[in-house]
Length: 351
Image 1 (cartoon, rainbow, N blue to C red):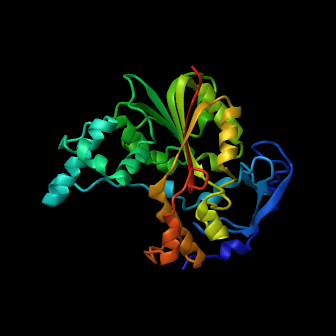
Image 2: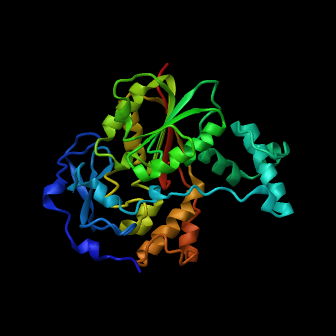
Image 3: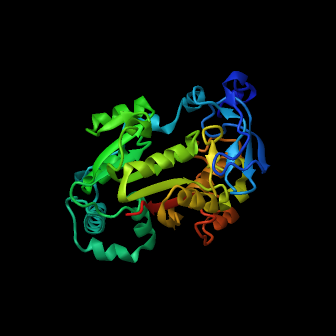
């Protein structure tokens, strides 16, 4: 069973900061969304927390929250601390059927995403189009990015152990990454990746240097989302692409699991967007051609983790392995990007 004793120890008062107005739009009108939230994901952060929702832009935010100097205490066992990147099972060790499937997938990825994987069967490029769940999952894995032109450069903010950087380097992107976690960066560097410790402030003296920037489940962790997005805008070349993925405070999962929704992750998640608030926020910072994607492949996973939390368990306990029937049924309901579990957006800097 998870150790819940940390909840009863308050976060030190002198390491808290108050948030008197919405960190996204500046409005002061708000409602209390949840109170007495705890770290029921990793069970390392002390204290109980209140989450408010802005009545103007509908994003949600903690008040009070850990300050910049103390927030690291909430990350003791965070998953970017993994020291081993999990590789696929070697081709030679697969059964005949799995070898055939691997070659089909390689053929699909080579044609549609620009990889150069071997062995591959070109038939996969056509045959796997018949499987919409697979197609959507692969697009999400490559973060909906187009194939790069020669010499184009991508920055991954919050790159962790570099798994995504390795993937897109495979298709031809010149890659760089930043992350505050030195343990994760050790893994990335062992795999030959160009990564720096910290955040986008590492490029404070630069402008218009990247063709694409990806911010995957990072913006909810930062104290100043506006600074992050405005810096990304400055660093992108005209016509450059920004990818953002973040939990959706107005998702179906929130309405079902409430305080136990996996996406809350108190107190590491400081700001949680809704679809309208993220759209308006990106427009305000100058981005155009905003497109949201539905992430069907994550729904059941988030629902199962939330269900375990509702039972008082860690979301990573592994038991139960299945949702109750009616909760499973809700997890596969048709959705729009407004009530998906994650807000996944691709936007452009004007040319």
